[in-house]
Length: 430
Image 1 (tube, rainbow, N blue to C red):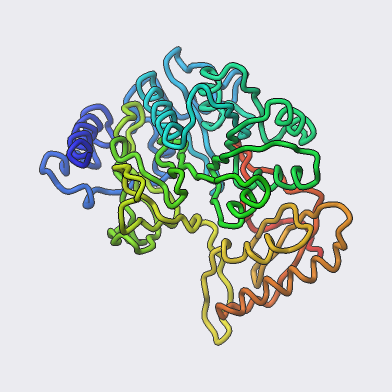
Image 2: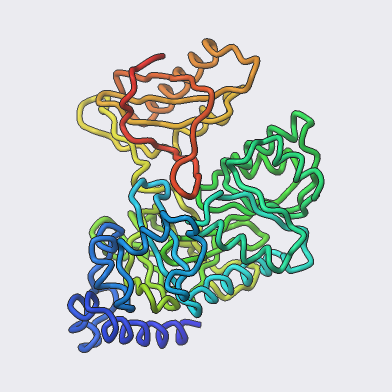
């Protein structure tokens, strides 16, 4: 496997230098001298967008053209009759675009089909997805392709009325559901209320951080196993859990993965990194060499007992952009990842959705509740619980505001739930 990866890496680097003016200038000398990949420069999403025309290997493609196609009447159609294009704002809020020719796209679908087979999904499985509504997003496009081998599977998306989703699921009775972790909570609430009546054996999640409380909720509600998948719009499907649900097996025959610290230095397996660098070996249209993904990742230290040859990410703590900064009890600053604050919200009675936003001297928590909840009492409990969680790590915000709304809108073309929102601009209310 690693021999194949090394061969494909050298082929990818040579192709990038020969076909992309950006890579010819930035890594051409490195490739010629046989410099190790760890010494190559990195590529951020911002750099990708600013240099799109010189990175892409077809000179007919440019950023404005791709964005215009995505903003047009038929973004799901082929650009120039050849290219599938997609966009992401993700949970980071920074826009990115991607382009795949026919061969590139076949690799995207092949990775996903292989991952699904690992967890027992084939063309006979009653499997369906509930992801983005827009063909701009890669999850929608992959879903369209996979429904082609399951023509009876209905198409749903997370922005449809929940009543329509429930009715469709009750009729179809899927054995497998693929959706966002945040939407698992929505479906579980419908099942517990008696409106949804399904018995899935497996739930696949993607695009948002999967936390233990979602796994526990699925087990309690359906006795279903939850397996996570790892997809990046710019690169495609990169990893998937096996049925042991103990870390993401990485497609090392299609990518090179590097977990690094803030200064791009490799960290050993078992050590949490500051970001993940990905080099894609299958996309010749838009080469990605050491592409920065802001996930806070830890690699496994031992092979998985399942026997798959792919190494695993043992945990993803979230994204760098979800880190919150607070005043420290005895002076200074302490960084607290927003995932640490999930527990007080997920365990609070009646909470339907929640989101954090930094304030100059504290934190705002936006919450939506299920009906018949004592909102004032619940808000006070949330404030006390979050403050206690922060005090445990010596964070001492002067202000914690709980803002109650009817619902929290999903963000971007992917319709994801953003855990941390930008600094709020609305009038404060508690």
